[in-house]
Amino acid sequence: MMVCFGTLAGMYALLGAPIVAAAQVLIYLGAISVLILFAIMLTQAGDANLPRPFHPQVWVAGLVALIIVGLIGYAVTQTDWHAAVAVTAISVETIATALFTDYALPFEILSLLLLVAIIGAIYLARRPEDDEGAN
Amino acid sequence: MGLQGYLLVSAILFGIGAFGFMARRNAILMLISIELMLNAVNLSLVAFNAYGPPGSPAGAIFALLVMAVAAAEATVGLALVIAIIRTRKTAEVDQYADLKE
Image 1 (tube, helix red, strand yellow):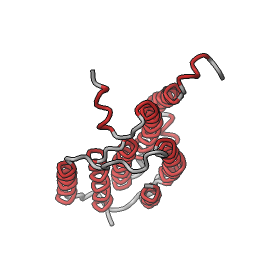
Image 2: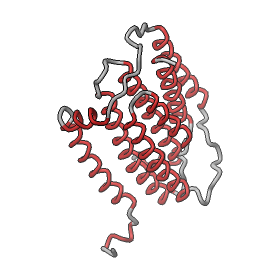
Image 3: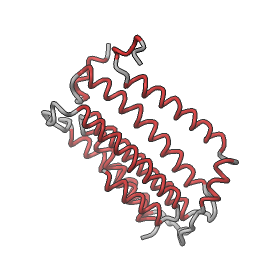
Image 4: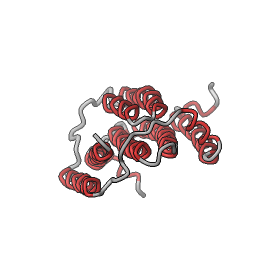
């Protein structure tokens, strides 16, 4: 999973979006991977091997996933991308200016969402014994 | 490798994520699959932006917003999963069927 995230960061850099590549490294490689590793260590200490990792209807899931990939792949390969000629790099300055002028409202909504997520995660991850204000 | 290559990689990544979400029964692995699907969408956004009209930062900004939403989702999702595993002692989502009333 971490190799996949790192490879994606390289592809963003190839596509001329260095700020997205940097954010990918910081957020996915740095934060989310460590978070998932912590969750796995916290939860799977006792039962490392589940009885059956896959759903009994795994072939249906595989079929549906193959259909999705096939349809998207067909659409991608059959479309004439006549405008696709060159990669144009985007400067960080352009992104920052647009983020704080044209996209100011999504930015503020996003900060509110992150605040709500922080509060929710703290509330959910708290132990029930701490209800009486131990800390 | 032009726009088609990036879009094909994105489609394959999305397919792997969808398959993992539907087939795996471990809650944490299902969350990882969701992250994979969000990454695929991000890749296609950035690819379209790079090959679209020059100088427009919309795709990169959308990708950054999706990344932040994915981080929030992973935080709350993992907190939920840890809380539910603490009470149920299992990570298998089929064992959560008695949550319905």
